[in-house]
Amino acid sequence: MQHDTFSPDYIRATWSGTASVEAAAKAFGMSRSKGYDLVRRDEFPCRVLLIGRASRVVTASLLRVLESGEPEYNHAPDALTTSPCPTA
Image 1 (tube, rainbow, N blue to C red):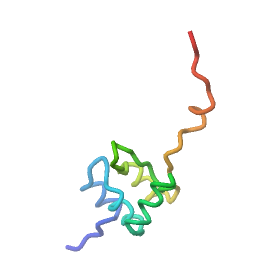
Image 2 (image 1 turned 180 degrees about the vertical axis):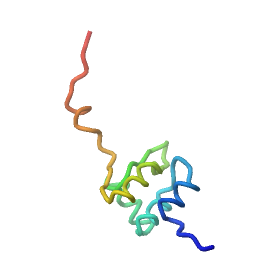
Image 3 (image 1 turned 90 degrees about the horizontal axis):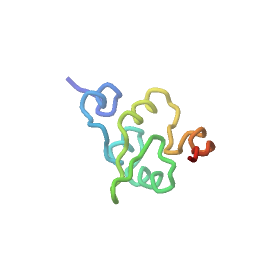
């Protein structure tokens, strides 16, 4: 039986909580170098974690973007960036 390595069902069943930028880029149909270029510019279409010097793509975010077609960048929600924290 042949399967689509980058279908949402296959990703959900076989990928862990995070994926390499290379694998995520392939899921979006782009090259490894294009994926890393978008990560450097903070324009990769789904959430990316920086762990030390390594970049890992959040698999749940990747799936949401693949299924909805709407990008989900690393930017914080407006409510978190515009509301000051209360002080004691």
